[in-house]
Image (cartoon, rainbow, N blue to C red; front, side):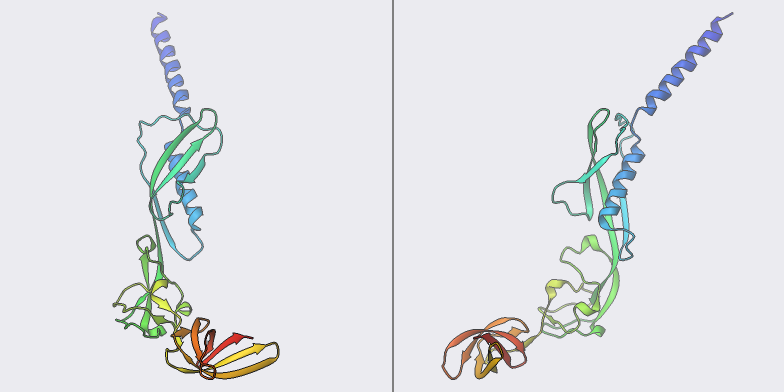
Length: 235
């Protein structure tokens, strides 16, 4: 008469034991959530500048890792860029150390400047030459610019087609001195200043160091471009 009751009791013990054993395994959802939170923090998600999409790969449900009693430690592989497909290491130290690598796909969308029309090499950029367009930053390996103020008045190093991203490598300060131009050479020593006539031997933007010939002495010197038709040297 007691046999069925013993079978039920034994079954309950087995079920409780199985549940306890299952609870000893690390939650795979927690691992994925930890990875995504880490990447979000590294990217500064929520700063209002970008729209972030982070999707960690689904982990094999057969994976059995001892439940971690300490906070999971997360790190990127050395030198890895936090954009596109990334590999994140997850480490547990207690009670039984283990290490797992999780793949994730990271995308950041933000408005970047693109050419509003085809632009010629050497042209000086105006605000109407550009427009903001939301793009996936993970695909922009050559860089990008968010702010019109950074490039308005800059010169284009090469032609730019309609819709192309305006990257930092495309622009340079405009030349204000051209090779062959007559310039004034300004020499200063404290409050004492002398100006001489010279000829530029190189093109130069403001702040550039160029070669200049002093037309009086015929000597070649290096001078800093400080304005249109004006270079400076220290005495």
